[in-house]
Length: 205
Ligand code: HEM
Image 1 (spheres, protein in one colour):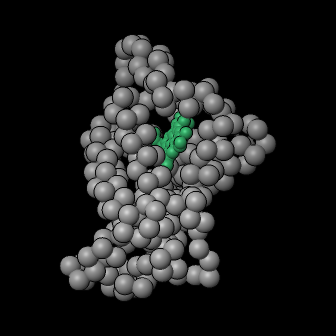
Image 2 (image 1 turned 90 degrees about the vertical axis):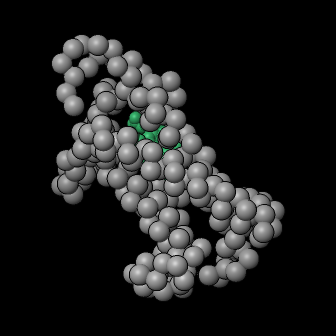
């Protein structure tokens, strides 16, 4: 949707800011309660420190996890629907190509990537944001298999059975945590983006 009038416009509309912060909260609850659930039956040779988990014990963690999963999935669907039907998804996140991502990454590493226009995501951001959308989708789908394994036989087979789905769920979580860590560093490096995500920045477009 092209804007022809020079009217002031928020770089981040209200629906985006709301769904973004609700998503951040849901992800925090899902990940920390998920760690507690993992600790009850670890897949690998380590556990997460209980002090950074949520729920107090397995049953408590499951309740948090099951409550927040609705929140995460419904909020995510609202975010995707707004993005798709407004044409914003295409406008903001495409085109994106391996060459473009590498080019912008190289420019960023040399401190040569500008942040003047908050209405424009560079290719590294595009890739990272699209990646996390797909990653959360994978988390929800593999979570469905773990929750209702018998009811989703096709999904279960696609994710290499129940045990396979557990591993997919675990690695998708690890990638999500890695994304959040990098995301927070990026935000700290360019703090004005945080302000825009909180209040929406009025810009001439
Ligand atoms: C306290 C934690 C977080 C902070 C402070 C934060 C901050 C921000 C900021 C400032 C932006 C705008 C970036 C820009 O304009 O250049 C942004 C965008 C975004 N963030 Fe976060 N974020 C947080 C957590 C998360 C989490 C947990 C996720 C997902 C797992 C996430 C996913 C995204 C996505 C997908 C966008 C792009 C949104 C769009 O334009 O449609 N963020 N975040």
